Length: 134
Image (cartoon, rainbow, N blue to C red; front, side, top):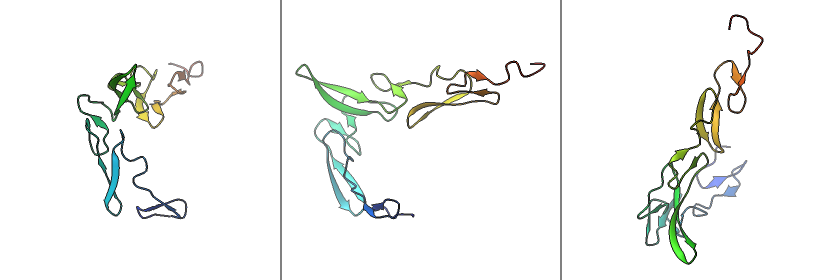
């Protein structure tokens, strides 16, 4: 089924709760119009979903969060799969594939192998010992 925005499920039988998990960093969600969710951010946060901390920028769609450690308030970037570093600036693709191209998928780095190679990281040369005139 091709569901309208307010419904989901195999037969469009499940109502979509637009505000559920929509705002980050304890921002409050409201729906000014049907099918439109917006966030009111707490002081120190900004962005459409309160995902940006004022004073710290996360890269590669990382989400900034205020955390409390040892009675101190700190800012931390929560990185999406495939990225790491203090500001999510490091791609896990760097050096990941032996051959081929690396892209970041929903679970992290994924290798696209060229012809003649296979394996999770394109590390298997398929013609080894089978081809003549290599």
